[in-house]
Structures are given as C-alpha cells and as structure tokens.
Length: 464
Image (tube, rainbow, N blue to C red; front, side):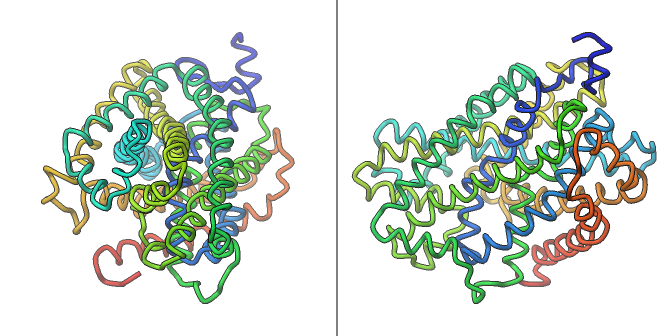
C-alpha cells in the first residue's frame, strides 16, 4: 500500500502497523474483550450476585454504557491515529490532557503483569489435565499448594508471558490479528461443546434457570457495581486498548456495526461461560450457596471437582482449560499491545525496543503478583496481596478515572458533533442520541459513584 492509499484508508504509517481489514479489526477487538474476564470472572460474579438478575443488569449496561464507551474510545483512536496519550494531546497539549492520556495508558501496564500470572495458572491446569491428573487437581489443597510454590508459579507465568511477547513481536497483522483469527473460532467451538455437556448433566437444569431467570430478591447495589466492573474488564474499556485498535483502523470500517458485533460476541461468550460453569455447579453441589459464592476460586477449585466427578472429566478438563488458555492469550496480547503502542508513539523507538520495555515491566510487576502468594505473602497493601491490589488499583480506581477522562475530553475539547462526524464517515450512527445522552449524563455520574464507593469500601468506611 503506497502513501496515498494509506492516507485514503486512514491507516497509520510506520512501525505502529494496522489491521488488514474489517474482519481483522473485529476479531482482534473481540479477542481482547473475550478473555479471563468472560470465562473466569463473569461466571463467578453471576453466580455470586444473583444469576439471572446479574445477567439482566449486565446486558442493560452493555447495550448503553458499554456501547457508548466502545464507540468513544475507538472513534477517538481512529480520528487521531494515536494511542491514548497521543489521542488526548491531539486536542491540546495541556497537563490535564497528558494526565488523562497517561491514566488510560497506565491501566494496561498494570493489568497485563497479573493477568499473565493468572494465564500461567491456566496453562498449569491445562498441562495437568493432559497428564491425567484429574483427581489430583480436584483436591481442596491443590490450588493453594501450587500457588504457594514460588518457583512453579513463576515458571508458568514466564511461559505465558513469553507466548504473549512472541505474538506482539510478530506485529499487528502477523501477530495480534493472526492470533485472534486462529484462536477465536476455536474458542467458540470449544465453548459451545463444553456448555452443552455441562447443561446436559443431571440436575444442571436448575442452574440454567438460576442463570437465565431474574429473581428480584437477589438484586442489590452490589449487583449493579459488580456488573459495571465486569463490563469494564470484559469489554476492554478504559484500558487504552480501544484507542490503540481504533488508531489501527481504516476510515472504511463501520465503527457502529463493529461495536454491535463486539457487543454480541462478547456477551455471547460470557453467556456460554456461564452455561459452562453454573449448571455444572448445580449438577455437582445442587446449587449450594457456599459453592455459588466461591468467587475467584470457582474455576480453579470448584470446577475441577465437577470434572473429577465426570466419567470423561479428563477430556472435558483438557478442552475447558484449552479454551480458557486461548481466551487468556488473545486478551493478554491486546492488553500488552496497548502498552507497546503507547511507548512507540511517545518515545519514537522501534517496536522491538518498546516490546522489550513492556516485557520488563510485565516481568517485574508480574513477579510481585506471583510471589505475593508465597515468599512475599506476608506483605499486603490495604490488606490485599500484590495481585489483588493491582486488580483493585486498575479496575476500581484507574479505570473509572480513565473512562471519566474520556467523557470530559469529548464534552470539553472534541465536541459531540465532531465525534459524530468521524463516526458518520463510515457509519449511520443509529444510536447517536443514546450515545450523546450516556456520555453527557449517565457515564460521568455512574463513574464517580463507582470510584468513590470502591475507595471507601477498601478503606473500610462503607461495606459493599
């Protein structure tokens, strides 16, 4: 593609790279959105916060709040051809814009290290199921013993990080996009297979009902707060990813249609994940509340028990953790790519140099998270391990601030009309009125409430 064609297509030049087309962009963003947030986080939150009630609130947020922020970040990225810092400062090189851009850019740099640690756990379980350790991993103490071994946790963390880094070094088209194109279809097939198997187990129908039928007795403020946090994590909002991927996108890509496809794909995988796990829990435990509220350990402690009780538990375990591994890889690649793109934009250095810089950050912060369960276990921040603290800092503090900064940027500097004009280059923008209303009123109010309530909760001032 020559320079005039690049300009016409709106493709950024140089080492930043670009997607090969519309499918590449959608699959890459879907790969980013579909990850541990869907398969690990969504089912345990849905199980814990009311099943069908949580699902209903989550869907409403996806179709309003989530849609608006996907459109906002992607459009600003395409409009400027830059990752977050460059996108913000394109509208004014003031300290406020620098801070807003860097907050969006720092989030993935905090998330990807601990994400890779959890990705390492997934690979460990995948390998154990291949080895036939179905009964061993189902033992109550297995997960605790594993995470308590510093060398083992660090090893699998490094293996997962190496896989992500190799994809990043391959570039946007041949690494990020190709990984998503290969892994996402396989992931969908595996998810459907495991979900069908789970739903057809004796007693699983009650789990399907719990997951799909809203019970207003299960509604609480935490249902909304948890669903909102999950939406951020799942859709890759306020992580700098959508700015970055938007900057790789040509002017011919229908942004609104792509946003709709991402909403459908992301929600579909989340629902499949719920159908893989929640009916299996009911089949195994009869829907005992202590099991449903197992929280983060649901995938690593409770589900292996389910597999161990199955006659074909080893095969299902292999397929399940292969699926989770693919999902984790596509997301981790996207998160790290956002950090690399920021360094490329801001330093002018080569992609290889910036990837190595991001790798160094990942290894240092990730090792803290890995060792936080063993040799650094006595060190806590606000009573949290390193991994839990990084998760709290990124998801409950920085991400609401980052999203709020995006809303302020649009309202104070870009303008709703100018942003709409960018969208309408390739889209009808059918939900423009909804977008404007959410960005102007709903998003700022929700974000401020979530930020304040999260901070007050961790300080012990309020209970959530």
